[in-house]
Length: 350
Length: 204
Image 1 (cartoon, rainbow over the protein chains, first blue to last red):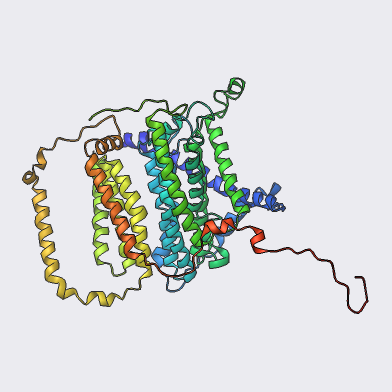
Image 2 (image 1 turned 135 degrees about the vertical axis):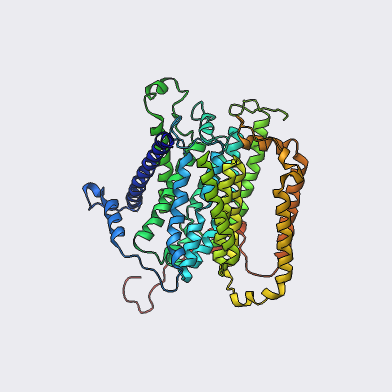
């Protein structure tokens, strides 16, 4: 029993705490990055008062939210009202268990990693739906209904995009998917799976309820949507969950379509040796940051979609696109169309 | 091994509790949420049986999609619970009959020898992931049942949509038409000389 404790439990708990701590820090500074990036896009400076160049702003925001009062609305469902933020943050953190940060640097190297991620992220909608229902408010409820419809619709497109990756890599294990993309920047799946890549990232934006798909919050239409009745720390947890989900979608896009921890200079004669000392984790984080920047860029650029437009885009555009590309990718895989798919498909009879 | 047993009894307890709450709790939204908990714990039990593909699919399909839509509908209903209780005595005999049947079936299954279940070989640890093995089986040995099942499901989808789709006149937008619109279709710019003021004051 003691053996089990020291050899398995404690190191794993240590790793989990490390991932969560770094993630929370990343979330805090993502909020600052968001305000700064959008500020500069809109010809403003953004927060620059707290600490040098405004670097302590997220800490101040966090402290403020911690000290605020949590107000429970009358005739609301207290248990579910408290449970909702927990259900929002739980999946956002649990999905990180299977993300490979570098070769062999992964908390749980499970075979069905991709499926696990899809299943766990599909649970994040419960936080929003329960929050909207439990707070006994019309605006919150409208936000919850919108969010439920939106997340379920975009999950299908997202799932099909992931099926494309699965066909291309021949594995559900995220580390194996990265290794299947070896060979340089042109071998990464963004090129052969370009439509799926675009569909995946846009569905990811929709899945995390970010602008221009933030109809679940829609400030100008339904005040703040599902979290209109939440204040203080309860609100902060929704905020944390949303940003953790954003980082998750970005790191998944980097892992599945941009070669994960692989160096972008692989196969280029001079640059490859020049940059060979850079650890894989740095490349992964740089790629993730690129996607996070695109998130913020999109938010600063596009106006919010109308509800029916969101549904149309999901069902009538994205799902057909992914279906067509699935046929193409399967054909390429079966007939070994190079340079991406020259591996031999194993055919064995059970 | 002891750890596994402890975990199993924990999950089994939670599952029984959640399943009981699903049928006893008055509020339909809470019942649906307990159903979510029941599905989730049964997925955990399947994981302990090393059926990771089935466990994850259960979470993905039922918890992630079916029950979300279920909640979606249940939350919008304003159910009067007293109306639901009215038929209790009327349906009691039928309910009891079904319950007795299920108990009999369970007893039959628990006596594993009745179905030859005791002769199933013990599961062997394999190097291959069971996702891969399941996929291979589905697409080779069971390919026809699999395809037929998917066709039946597609027919069901088409049927459901045709049943609910009523062609009615309403204002709809055609995005293709909207994209095709050019500014000259909507606005006409006219060049004309500026007019002089009638009273002759100021600049023209």
